[in-house]
Length: 150
Ligand code: ZN
Image (tube, rainbow, N blue to C red):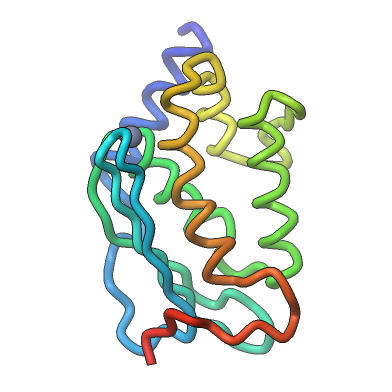
C-alpha cells in the first residue's frame, strides 16, 4: 500500500473514531478557536497535575484534517510535561511549515498529516488544535489562564 494511502487511513480513523473527544468539567486550562476559512471549531481541555498534562481532551466540529489532528494531538501530548508538550507543538509546527521532517519516532501518528503541507489551504486546519493548545498552555511559566473553565 502506498504511504499516502496509509496516512489517509490514519487520518480517517481518527476522524471517525476521535480519541479523547469529550468535555472536561473542571479542566484547569481550556481554550477555543475556529478557522473561519473552513468552518472548523476546536475547544481543548487540559487537566494539569504536577506540571504534567494528566488529561487532554477536545470537542469541536469541522473537516477531517482539523478533527483528526486534534484527536492525534490529545494522544500525543497526554501525560507529557508542559515543557515536552511545548516542544511537540514546536516540532509539529516545523513539520507543517515544511521546515522539519520528523519521523514516527518523534511524532507517531502525527506524521500522517505531513502530506497536508502540499495543500496550503488545509495547513490551517491541521494546525488549529495546536494553536488552541498553545494558547491554553500560555507562553510564560507564570501563565494564568484567561479562559479557564473554573
Ligand atoms: Zn478544515
